[in-house]
Amino acid sequence: MSPVSTPVISAAGLTKKFGDLAAVDGIDFDVPPGEAFGLLGPNGAGKSTTMRMIGAVSTRTGGDLTVLGLDPDGYGPEIRSQLGVVPQEDNLDTELRVRDNLIVYGRYFGIDRRTCARRADELLEFAQLEDKARSKVDDLSGGMKRRLTIARALINEPRILMLDEPTTGLDPQARHVLWDRLFRLKERGTTLVLTTHYMDEAEQLCDRLVVVDHGRIMAEGSPASLIREHSSREVVELRFGSDRNADAAARLEGTADRVEVLPDRVLLYTADGEALLERVAHLGLRPTTSLVRRSSLEDVFLRLTGRSLIE
Amino acid sequence: MTTTTEPMSLAAIDAAQRPRRFGALYVAEHQIRQMRAYAWTIVVAGVGSPLVYLVGIGLGLATYLDQQVSDGPAGSVSYVWFVAPALLATAAVSVATEEFTYTVMAGFKWRRIFLGMNASPVSPEQICSGVVLAVLARMVFTTLAYYLIILAFGAVGHPWAGFLMPLVGMLAGTAFGLPLLAYSASITEDKGQFAVVQRFVFTPLFLFSGTFYPLATLPVWLQWIGWISPLWHASEVGRTLSYGSSGSGWPTWAHLAVLVAMSAAGWLMARRTFVGRLRG
Image (cartoon, rainbow over all chains, first blue to last red; front, side, top):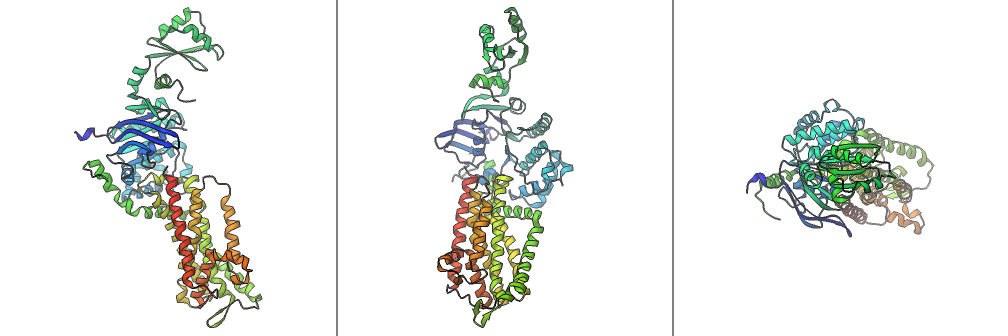
């Protein structure tokens, strides 16, 4: 057995029930060290519950789970000592200043104050917050708070960084700054585990992902392979107006590999979008707008579940 | 438990040693750092409130009292001597009503900092202990300051025995505060419960616990409030420390036993509530 291939996280039949409801319903996956692994799915799919079980703050009700070769049931503090956790909702201490947030948090890992202070300065630089060291947390923008939360999660030099919906609620520019920072961590070899319901985020950051819905894994693979396997190369989006989409779709049946009707548009899956647009024109259909694009994870999700990711 | 030779597992086991041992202290360190934000309030309340009470009661109320309030072994006891131990215990209890309510709500809900701690190696039990330790630290300051001030006012019979009064006061603080901590930790939505605790629990206890007059003055059907009140038990022990006798007829150990039992029950409930809330 080569040490490189030993997974840092291994789940088999992992289940979490709340009463009769199975929030996580028997999922299997392995995460090798250094991978950026994503859980993609809509709200309520069981992503956060899975993250909490990996993070050793929620006990599983069935199946097997090891993190760094240890069972969270008996080794919670040991596992948590090696994780960095970026929660969905920030829980920074707003009574403390920016730099003190990092130092205080480092203490929970038993790191001495001097080391905490040194790492805090390095991490503030990494998070591009050097000039905010003495600021109050409440004076930071949403994107800065997220970066501070990520810096805080790195204070113990974790083997695995867990991010739950890292960019939800951020504006596009703040998202890109954050992605850039996460990309750097990835390059340094940090294992990333993240949940998201944004397909562009999953495509940007994940080496491999699982698509989760109703507590089950629907598909697994790299973003490119998932798209190849579950969608066509291109997609044509046509809008005929909400009351005419269904009629138009009926007439378009057979022109593409697959036709999907959404409330606001019709999606045609095909290898060659431009050629298909010409055939649409020949049929005498006049969409108000038309667009040819590459297939995305959104299309994969729609194919697998019959629903949109963001509703 | 399984044995492992996997290097990453061994590294984790090694890294968790200090948090497993000292986690509660790290939490306390954080909480005390936070108190700096309102350190001024702590100092003003800690020093100002005894000054105001002692001046008001000693120079005002006491001069109107003709009837003697209590007897020590050496004869009649001045009113300020009678009241001082009760005021000291009240100070510790009021620290508890402040810290074991809003601070806990902030930790679980308003600022969610307990959730942040929870993701680190420290356990829910350690978070609970750390919160309590920090409050005890504040109580040490408040009760000691109180004692030194009543000492300066000459309101203590035996100054050396009286130095145990802060400890007894803190025990009243935990007997009242730890059950309150358990309750606060169970609240998921703030609907003004803490104002209710303040008005309908703390204030009646303050007034009906033999704080300003011997409990026996009240009709029997009201005296039970004193029996279940940490304030009464601590005041009686404080009086015994100060001038040798409280006059209640209860032995000192019985008062202490009630305080210890309430603290212990509250402590167990609080820990359990923290675990339930942070581990789902």
